[in-house]
Length: 170
Image 1: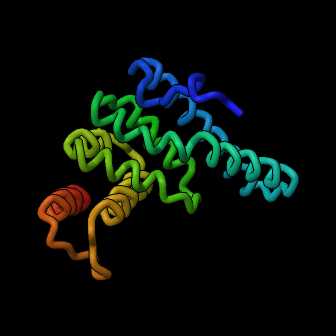
Image 2: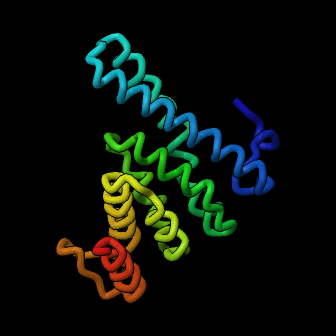
């Protein structure tokens, strides 16, 4: 039990504290995901069990909840350093079935498409770019009312999707 007077909402914290918290969580998730990938490739079953447990627990307790806050933080600050860290974390965690990162990057793209694309085209790894483009698209599909053929009458969705497709073709 924790009394509600002892609870602080992350969104209400000072912007610098939010950045520090986001940085710590993204970096830790990236590290855990990298450790998991290494254990998986090495076929070390003990290491695999340990790393998968650590990654799942951290993702559930820290990473997924912070992904609800990340778009709001990014959209209000235009913090490209956090965005770059998020890209690196998404790449390290590429095998995850967690869709929260797609939803978060889709929200970031919806509010700041130029900034998100500007940082994305700076990436040198083409596989990483493709993954992030795909995650942005998935995030947009989840954000807007889309039919089973990925079509919508929503003008904002169509504008964002068109922009994303245009950049992807380059």
